[in-house]
Image 1: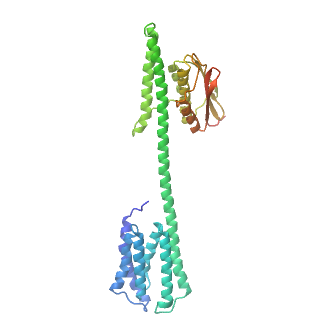
Image 2 (image 1 turned 90 degrees about the vertical axis):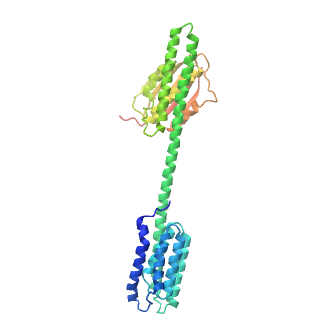
Amino acid sequence: MRIRPRWTDRMLPPVLGAVQVAFNHGAQGNQPDRLPADPLGIALLLAGPLALYLRRSHPMLALAVTFASTFVFVARGHAYGPIFFSPLIALYFAVVLGHRRTAWTVSAVAYMFFVVYTTWLAPVPSPGLWHDLAIAAVLGVVLAVGEFARARRERAVEHVRVVEEESRRQASEERLTMAQELHDVLAHNISLIHVQASTALHLIDDHPEQARTALTTIKQASKDVLTEMRSVIGVLRDGAPRSPTAGLEDLRELIERSGLAVTVETAGRVRPVPAGVDRAGYRIVQESLTNARRHAQGSTVAVLLEYGPRELLIRVTDSGGELPAEVTGGGNGIPGMRERAAALGGTLTAAHHGRGFRVEARLPIPEETP
């Protein structure tokens, strides 16, 4: 993550340059044994702050220029003082921007330079051990603050990355959910249209009134599939309203359109369930009826909804009808139902039951309260 420079960042170098030049005169007054700043000394005082313009784009170059100008300034015998501001700021940014090894190495070199200079090269007696410890402490504090800021910045970058990854994951899950919705809508309604169209063709000559009923069912099924497709696909459009998704309360209408002899039994205390369970329960019954109509034409179907203390049991059993029930290997209906149940923390089984077939799903629901 790149730090975006602000106007305060652009103002730092000129302000710091003015401070170093102005305050150097005060430091010179307190150090009469040091040389006053000549034009070259003034240039060295300004070189460090000007190099800070590069502290974000080229932190190593800024670090090298600030420390080099400081070394030359001190070695020429000028007064100690604000000249040290620039290298400390450059050192901090080098650590924050990830150049930790170089920053620590430069700090060690700077410490050795000041210790050697004040002990053996300076024209005045050595300040002693406390002076050396103070230099180490200042460098250590700057490095520690830089390390803390760097770790905090990396955590912020990681947080942004995790949020973006979570957004992508949620988008993928939403696309998968929409694909499942479209599959269930199309599979059920197209299957219903196919069955009713076959019935209409068979009856249109001898029993036109019954054929009319089949055609009416086709008309309603095609209308329903278009409505549900618009509802699902409408999510892809910004600001598009989405109609409520079909749920368990719509089972009666689903059964009336199925063209099968269906009985519905409800057990336990009927109560509202989470939206995901409501939608999954409807789709599981819908897919089960679709399979019964495909593979067990003329069968009777029993649907049981049992509201337990912590789970909703959905059981759909067909009698087998005129044709034996079977599970075709190429379909995605039963795997899709299992995925829906598993996504909610539930289970789904599908197996032969006598001459027919039974689908049984157990979906977790909030614990029943008195």
